[in-house]
Length: 268
Ligand SMILES: [Zn+2]
Image 1 (tube, protein in one colour):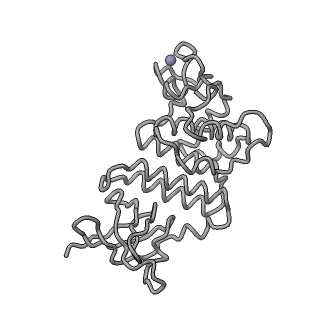
Image 2: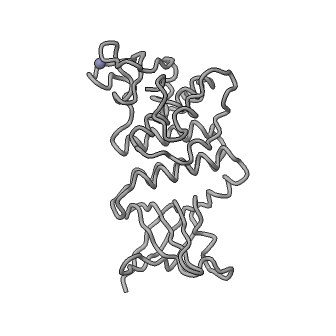
């Protein structure tokens, strides 16, 4: 009998048969792991409640022929408790889990950096100190950096000319200089690009000094860039509450993340 231990965050649970579940975890050392938790849907289960989405757990697995089997679980952080009852934090946390799931296509491939980003984002969201929209955008920017396609923010995405530049093109890869600017590029406020750069680098003092219009515009650029590269819609994003329409005008998140449409012209 082969056993191994790891710490991980529960990304997803699926029913299996009468009483079992398949648990998808993003672990510190083994990347994404799908494992069977037997009997967890029975009320007498020893560890059913610990294996819910958002749970940060220490798990012992028994290596199985097809799927591994969970044999022990200890809770490290019950992040779900800090998310219940707060719709914007809950939906932001759902988007974190779903993005992490989609960025780790291959099970067993180490993803330590992404695991740390997920734990950090869930801790910040359940801690209720920071704007959940900013926490989500910081996570998404860093997750895109993990995947190798973070938007260029401080230099031109095409020629590398140091910025800041006034245009942003998702297909081109981020901010673009006047010479490289494709037709239909967005013209975000300078403050918006400074916000995204601050979020990418964890400069919360700068990020939290930025007002709502730039936060909304930044969220729209992040969502459009993410969607372009994922080529699949992130189901959770349209649910994320962005305090929309406080100042009227464009609604970049909704444009970027709704339906199967490509990002609207002003976003690309
Ligand atoms: Zn250029």
